[in-house]
Length: 137
Image 1: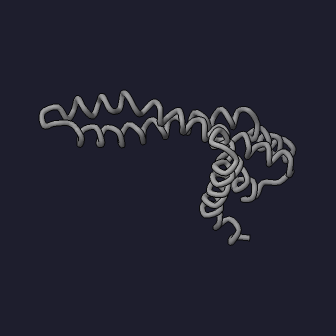
Image 2: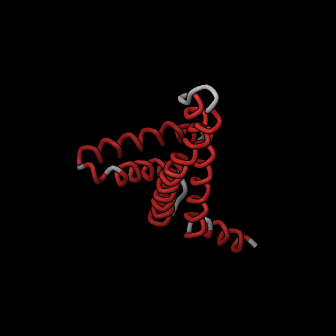
Image 3: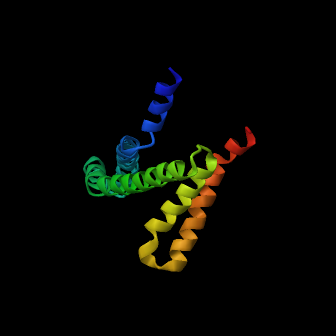
């Protein structure tokens, strides 16, 4: 019985998890981006055209934000699963290192300094999020 449970747990660290996380991140970016850009578009539109302005802002900007969230979520999940596979254990360090790797990878086109800065910021952000995980041990 324990063997089957253990193998199911490891299945969640494969391609299924990465694809699932990409879809979840896309959905969060789409919903959050729609709300944000609707409010911003309605605020910046003249009186009488606020509903249309908000809808146009959502149509133009929400898909871009959703795609960015999906790229970040997919890379983070891929790095996290890779670290779990390499280190053979599940702990907060995997998420912290995955956040750093994701931040650095997404900023690679801007050069080494920008990639290094983003990697440090990504690691620090995930350390702040996962910090309570260290305190529970």
